[in-house]
Amino acid sequence: MNKIEQKHKQVIDFYIKNADKNVVKKLSRYFREGLDAYGCDRKKEEAQHNRWLKEWEEDMTTKDFLDFGDRLVATGKYEEAHCATYFILSGKNEFTPETFERIGKWLENGIQNWANTDALCMSVLSIFIFEKIVQPKDFSGWTSSPSKWKRRAIPVTFVEAIKKGHQADSYLKVIENLMEDPEEDVQKGIGTFLREVWKNDPEKAENFLLKWKEKCGRKIIHYATEKMSKTDRERFKRTKK
Image (cartoon, rainbow, N blue to C red; front, side, top):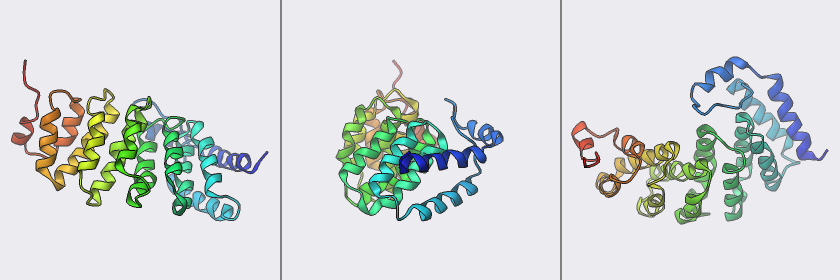
């Protein structure tokens, strides 16, 4: 058994020991497609994450944590995917474009719900944008991914950039390739992104929505316009045929 297998066993043993069906039942309400989870108290989990990282700091490199992350997300377990996100943050100072692509594969090879996706976007993938390791255009290849979670990751990551005051134009160019995506989970992410753009630049967001309102999914419109007045929202209804 190599060191990653040993550490994975530690992770599994911890979660089995601290599994709680009531926690799973409570969490499952937020996942319409179901949730594969152990059910662990979040505070207890976070404390254990910190202990693991301290214990492993001399033993695990960023590459090791990438390999470990591959293994963790492949199980499909909610908490193990959360571990992968938390652990890889310890190597953020060594992130490269290759790291970006490697982490992106987690969204095709195991991550299978909105919560794990969004946590990865907000805490990890956003770093690649903020530190200029990648550009918005580097997400373009993700728009054709067979995984709806990888496609959702694009607008959810971009939300963080807009919140930081980034100009929307380069992000909108990538989002255009997703505007006819049929998956509601992707549409919700896009709508949230456009709502954030609207807060900073209403004219730009509204012109973009007017361009797409006849073709894009309705969840995009719903989420993008929910902070507008009722009168303003009327402008983005589809034309009756």
